[in-house]
Image (cartoon, rainbow, N blue to C red; front, side):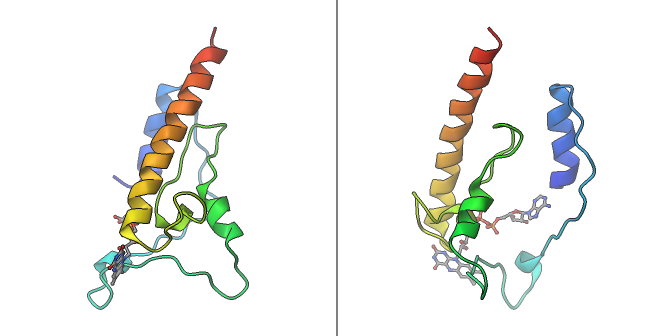
Length: 107
Ligand SMILES: Cc1cc2nc3c(=O)[nH]c(=O)nc-3n(C[C@H](O)[C@H](O)[C@H](O)COP(=O)(O)OP(=O)(O)OC[C@H]3O[C@@H](n4cnc5c(N)ncnc54)[C@H](O)[C@@H]3O)c2cc1C
């Protein structure tokens, strides 16, 4: 399922609507027989700050982002499998943290 199909389903449970994206860019490097994948690179004009921005959650702790391109800080292994894996653990912890806060706010 594509991300843009999944998000409205997830948020409908919360009785919230997700607006249509203004713009999307979706690469398919994994399907390219000459590369079979890709990883992040700090381009000219970019900086490590961009990794931090990609790691920020949105919707007051409702949508979270993992992946090697979010791992400038702990766990700091950009462009690697272990960075991707550890970022998933990081975001699982973040989800648990925000879920606790959101649950507490209901009482
Ligand atoms: C040639 C090559 C060699 C490498 N060698 C090593 C190595 O030796 N050691 C090492 O540690 N790392 C290596 N890496 C890097 C490692 O593969 C990546 O860092 C890691 O796979 C990144 O994982 P990820 O989950 O962040 O992203 P990805 O593995 O890219 O996963 C992203 C997933 O999201 C899916 N997706 C994209 N858009 C959408 C959408 N709109 N809706 C739904 N799904 C979507 C994609 O199909 C993909 O499955 C190598 C990479 C390449 C390309």
